[in-house]
Image (cartoon, rainbow, N blue to C red; front, side):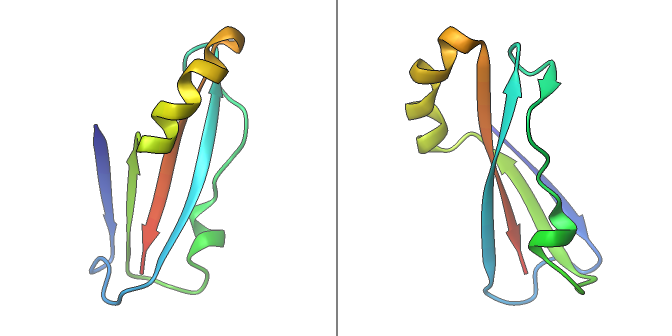
Length: 77
């Protein structure tokens, strides 16, 4: 499952930065904030994709006792 946001003209190059976002109580509360402006500074055109990656699926059994979940945020420039 993934969701894509296009900002400006979208990704125009081959750059890519990824970060992991964590949630508590099965997505009710955000634990950390992933700021896309910090991942793509001074850019006006980029693509943001949020998805559940293979690593997120591997982390799920470890985070489940804490009712936490994670997802990957990828910024393509």
